[in-house]
Structure formats: C-alpha cells, structure tokens
Length: 335
Image 1: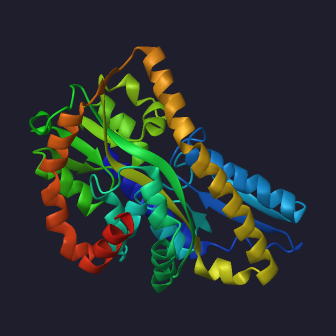
Image 2: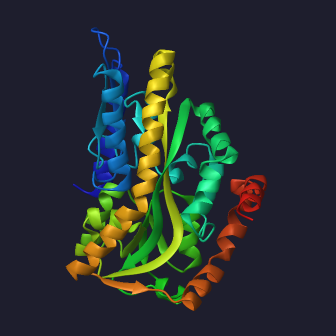
C-alpha cells in the first residue's frame, strides 16, 4: 500500500468512527475515560509528560477518571488528529504548534519561524506569559480548549550529507509537517518541502521518498532515524513545541471539580515535562554519539549566522499571514 493510500484509508476510518461514535467518556458507572492521542514515541519529553498526566489524574481521582494514552500515532496521525479532535473521535491531543495554522490559527505559526528564539527561556516568556494564554484562549473559535504548552526543544537538520551552509540544502527533498512557514523555510534554502505525517517519516526516508528532515534529537533517536540518515547537523534553527488541547464538548461535560482536577494534574505534568526536555535531548544525543551510526556536525558561530541570514526572507514573507501585531508583541517580549 502506498503512503497516499494509507492516508486515505485512515481518513475514511476516521469519518466512519466519528459518525458512529458514542462519547467514550460517558460511562454508566460514573467513571470517566479520557482518550488522549499523540504521534511521538513514549520515551520522549512529550510521551513521558503525558504518561505522568495519566498517572496524576488516576491518583487524584482515586481511579475514577482514567486517561488512555495512545502514543506513536497508534490512534491518529499528523494528517487526521486535529479532525479527530474536532469531531469528538478523541478527547485530548498534544499536537505540535504547527498544526494550528492549517485549521484557522495562523498566529500559532510564529513558533515555526526560524531563529526566532535563541533559548528555551525566551520561548517560555511567550508560552508561560499573557501572550501564550491569549493564543490558547483563541482556540475556542474552533471548538477547542487550550490547556497548556509542552516543550520538545530545538530542531536540527538531517540528511545523507552534512547541512552546514545554505547551498547544502539545494535540491534535497525535505520531509516537513504541514506548515506554510516550514515549507517556505525549505524553499528559501533551495530544498523541496514534502509534507508527510510524522509516523510516515522513517519509511519515507528508508525508501528514498525524501532525503532529509528536521527534528529535535529526542525524536530523531526514538524514531530510529539514525538508521536511515547518515548525517545530523546541529543547526538549532527552530523550536518544536506542543499545545495540549481538549474537545470543547468533552470539556464542558466534565463537572467543574473534575475540570479543576484534570487541569491541576496536567499543569504539574507539563511543568515536569518542560523541565526534562533538555535532559532527554541530551541523553538522545549521547546515545547517537555512542551508536556511531550517524555523523554529528556542530555548526560554527559563523556557519549558524550565515544560515540565519539566509532564512530572514521567511520572516518577511510570512508576516502578513501570521499577523504583524503578533510578531511585534513577541519581539517586544524577547527584547
């Protein structure tokens, strides 16, 4: 079966499920089951944080509220998880911030801009401040409830050659998630962006459907991309973060006390997950070094500056779509 056929079958299954679904959270015995789907492996900052959330909820509710976590695209993948949430086929997601642009929230695409953030602390000024809360509140326009942000760290470029200068990208087919900003980024570098679900990335790299991709190191390692990518260049060019969101109908179904319980459990898990994100990426990098399967390239300060300079047109080209006011507010926060 081709990648395209696989995606079509998943969409058809999703539509059939959504039409027939009885909300899984409405249990006759008074217990509540929350279905939470995500696309990365369990042993990643996101995977670990969501399992901690599950355990927090079970403990705080005495087992009355149960969170079923479906990792690694077992339930839904990049191509259909947002639709699944809006249809009520799943109750909670933790999608990458890139996912919100295509469903009507282009302001979230500011997080995809290359070299906008230099440190995790800068990211947190936005996600943990008033601007981040305002972004989450706006999700109600599409029947979503924004509950918080989760880090995965800075992204790096991989391929079967070192990517140290803008000209190194010319002609490469680079797998990306659906994001106009990231697609523009690749085109500015002379590469060809290819939108594929995260769960399809390894197979596409192995079959030479694409030549390279971008990921935080923990995703690169846990998805075994070192088996199909000879070179990893530590570009640190962009930030990958997530927002934990709930279906609005499900959230309103919960009693106010249960909403408060779930929110507290999630807040603790997100704080914990954000604290371990760098540790998990450092551990993955050490594992990659130890494996010897992939050549790891550090960019010099001059190389990083040249790459940053080459990507400035991405900011200029997307300002109208994202919204000049949003960007101005972010830049003011970052100083």
